[in-house]
Structures are given as structure tokens and as C-alpha cells.
Length: 409
Image 1 (cartoon, rainbow, N blue to C red):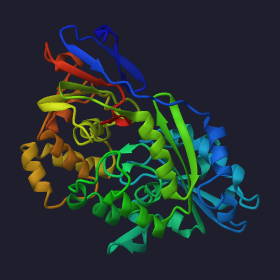
Image 2: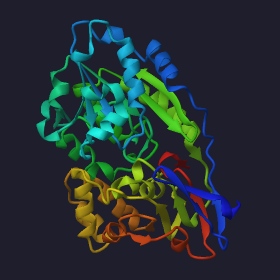
Image 3: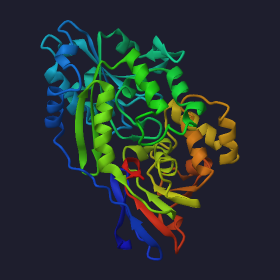
């Protein structure tokens, strides 16, 4: 590889990295071909998995649509347009509520809602997990649901089917169950007993206990019908609509084909790209570390390091989950101590500290180019002003330009 041509995402831009004294290899995914999102959405709604939307939504129904938040690059405005074009004519905008599936992330600002949803912005409200109501249970755990969503006759959802550390792939029922739910299911699915199971891993949907629990909670809370996308380096690769399990199965197969790369052996350093919107805070940025180290094939040698350039404009993150993550990491003496301590249990949202500690027992993590290096240093990780400063001369380096959307196998 030409070491003068390493480019990694950084916020909405890229940075150039030169490592002349290193042996550098870059992964290249198959990638897939981009689709026109609106045209693909219309096709998906015409040929859904299961009953069509006009069979699901009656003319006199009140409808709630749960959408993804700023941490997902989902084209929700386009998907909402597609939904509205297919709803029965009697279901006008004043009978539709749009709820942001925040989970325990921070609320979106008015400016972010306007930028993300355009003409639909007046319909959009932030989910408040404190106001969620119990609507049933799964495995003895209360399933909570946003009050606005619970009041609706029919629940629809958008979603992004992308690699996910626990669910295998995100999307489907997860937008509603986690995004518009409450702490009990988050505590159960993100607890140490669940996350320590070998089958709970990146890229696995079948026989994944986390995915199964979320899907069964979705049978209780909804959605009744969803439309999801998946993406790759070329952009959105596919759109599917209908029953949540089938939608995830369809799009995860598309994503796996486009995003999987075979990597032989291990490396001293893995350069991991993140970029916007995930590199806005450390909570989301550390997904690059855990996706690599705790995926199907860990490409980092024992004692090696993962290096991630990230802007971190929000520091550790501003939501409840992000704050719990930060508190756990900054109060820990070592990754091993934190992992042992958290095996006994933790608050919902803190699970990212648990999996970070698990990864840091094996490798080091360096976050570079950030606007909040002090936050990184507090959290058992190293910081440097540039990527080059975090890579020792003579290192054997693997470059994964889009670490959150690459399956290393």
C-alpha cells in the first residue's frame, strides 16, 4: 500500500496519515452497489415481508412511527415520506406521531430534528424513558413502552440494519424495544450475564440470545411493521419492509456480503476509522475498539493497539447511558479490575464500559486528534495529537477505514 495515501474519516471530513516506517495493509470490502433510497423504499413497501402497510393500518387508526436518533445515519426523512405516501388517505398527519428512539442517549436538539426530518419535524418528539409504561414482559422482565407509542393503535418503525456488538445486526424490533422502551429490558439485554454469552456477538443474528430477546419483546411492544435500510461504503445498499424478523434477516444478508473481509493473522496496530455521527462522543467511538477485538476474528496481536482518530465534540457523551459509561471507566483502577467488578452487575447504559474493559484486558486503545483528550485519558485509554504519534516505527499496521461497518472474519 502507498503509505502516503492513508485517509481516515474524522467527523464529516477525513484526515491524511503517513507511516513511512511501517508495513501497512488496508482492508477492502466487496462494498456492494448503492440504491436510490426513495425508489428502493417504494419497492420494499410494494413487496413487503408479510402483510402490506394498507393491510396493517386501518383508516381510523392512530399511528406512531418510531425513528432512529442522531447516532444512526438512517435516511429517516426519506423513509417517512415513503410511509406517508402509503398510509390510507384518512390517516392524516394530525393522527401520526413520530418518536425518536433514543434509548438512553441524549435528546436531539430542535436544530438536529429540523435538519434530520425537514417538513416532518413538527411531528417529532424525543423519547423519555422515565415516562414509559409497562405493556407486558419477556423472560419475567417488564417490557416498557413510550406513552405516545403505547397510545397509538399501530406502531411503525424505521431502522438501520448495521453490524451491532450484541444484536449481531441492529434494526427490526430494536428501534422500538430499546429506542422507545425503558430501563428493565435494557438492563436485562445489556447485563453481564447476557453479554458474556459466546453467541452474543457482532454479525450473528441466528441463535443469538440478545437478538432473540429483543425480537420477543418486539412481539409485545411492536413494531407492527417496519422499513429498514442497510449501508456500505457506496451508500445505502438495500431497503426492506414488513415483519421485523424477516426485514433484519433480509438486510443482514445484504450487509454481510458487502462488509465482510477475510484477514489472515494479527497486527501490531489496527487503525480504525469511525467518522460522523459516531465519533461525536467516546461512548460511540469505542465501538470501533470492541467491534474489532470482540468480533469473529480479532486482528490485533496480544499487547497490540487499536488507534482511532475521533473528534469527540461531545466528550464522553451527554445521555444517561454515556454518563454511566464515563463514570465507570474513569473510576476504575484497571481494565481487569473493572471487568471483574462489573461482572456482578451494572446500570443500563454502563454496558459499553463492560465490553470496553473486556477488550482492554487484551489490547491498548489510543484515541487521537480529539477535542477532549482529557476524557480519553480518564477512561483507561491513551491519547495522542495525531495518528502517527500513536504508531511506533516499524509496526505491522492494518487499516480498517470504516471499522463500524466492516466484519473482520
